[in-house]
Image (cartoon, rainbow, N blue to C red; front, side, top):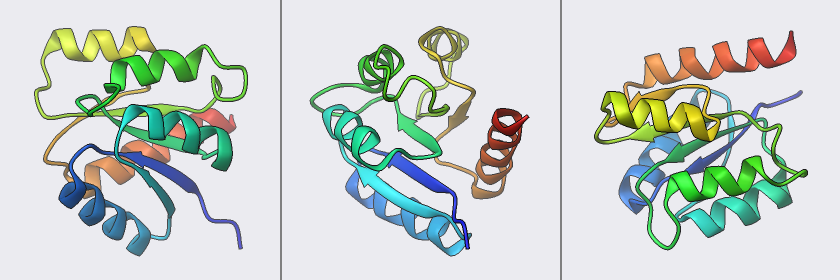
Length: 126
């Protein structure tokens, strides 16, 4: 059976673990990373179907990690949904400019996030 593979990049360990458990329960295979550099390595190694990217992470923030992903021929095609604690119009615009397929506010509403994940994956398949 095929499981959708998600890479969850979240700087806060508690939030990362909680969201990973909730997404796993929903039937996704979840790989996690706690900082931007970890996201780059995990994306190259695991080739996820979609990345959920916290924009405010240590070592390398989500914007820098996203630009690196989009400039890498091994990862540029992976869709990314941004996760942001402070979702302003400027933040949404910057995320879109950086290549995100949407921006979800934190704390995450799981039902809405799953709907967004499925919408992005359907659009990618078409």
